[in-house]
Image (tube, rainbow, N blue to C red; front, side, top):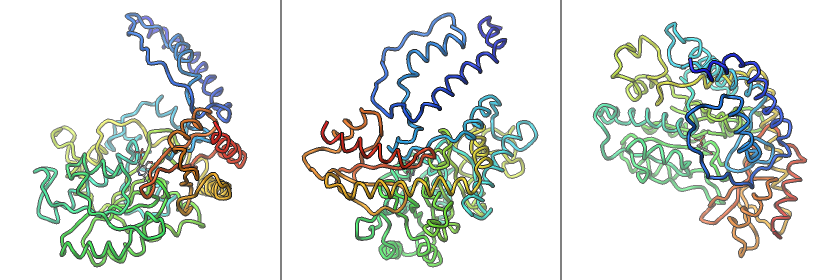
Length: 464
Ligand SMILES: Cc1ncc(COP(=O)(O)O)c(C=O)c1O
């Protein structure tokens, strides 16, 4: 064994104690750490011939990067849709690295990790009050979940048209309908060979809404003269967190032949609160659902699940089976996750979710979700009363979409001034064709004090 490696092996306890002290320092100070500002040097050293050992590498890392790691898991990082990491999820994440399992099979060797993944999916179905006729698994993020669901949808659509796309490749003429698909669903269509331009756009509702106009959906479906299609619907659009009307879509499903996909990357968490769960009424009738865990479940990156109805298992296996590895056996007889999703080898990605679900339960998530929504409303109220800003969209859940009242100040320049200060982080977007700003609150740590502090900084940045 390499001497340096051997030395690290001998001192594992000491090493883990040192790393723990950096971790504790980071987590205990996270409220005061900058949310942005400093840029890392791009001067990269050559790989040394002789290693430094883990302890010296830790010191070198801390010296070069520790102080400029931004508090993106802190309470005022409201850019994109960025969740934090609950204490229990960090415990699970650390153990996932320590155990270093390859989560695939249920056949004895390594089966525990696949069983943990299945148990975690069952816990999540419970959290979202969804029935167990969905089969689920973990992927890295909502993009990969959309990809997985739409991959199976593509196979289903091919089957309806008498084709086996997984075997014979893609052909023209697959119909995809959507009103406000997330960019990752569009990206998935391009990765799947369906083509990102091949979406038949459904009109949205009047009044700055991003939800689809169901009458237009019906009209577009009728134009297809009975041809099957895939519908990509939204439970929480990224700008204004708008929800498509699932009760109406569910009714239309009786009339037309389509695969119903819901991108519920963070909107799924409305299910955790009786105040908001009606936004999801009938979502259990969808064929597939995308849900991100590294958003509102507040587990570390990378964690999302796909849920696909078990009735589509054959389509799913035909899409993802690792068929050129006969030693892995028949996918229907020998369960192995690698035949059901894009990746083959995967870490024990479910463990942080398992820990956080066990630790905080339904009540814990209800309180995280309701807290984020009431703080979003507090922020929206402050912005609405302020003549320097304009609210652009109704507040449906956890995001404020707004712009600067002064049109001569560009949102991007304003955000670059604000984000450099490092007290709050917001991102730019385009809403209804205009440049806009979003604040998305999905972090368990955020308090009223953070909202007031952030709003004060937002005002100060107007004059910077
Ligand atoms: C609605 C929606 N879908 C998909 C995604 C993509 O998620 P990820 O970055 O985890 O792949 C996002 C990210 O913000 C989202 O808001």
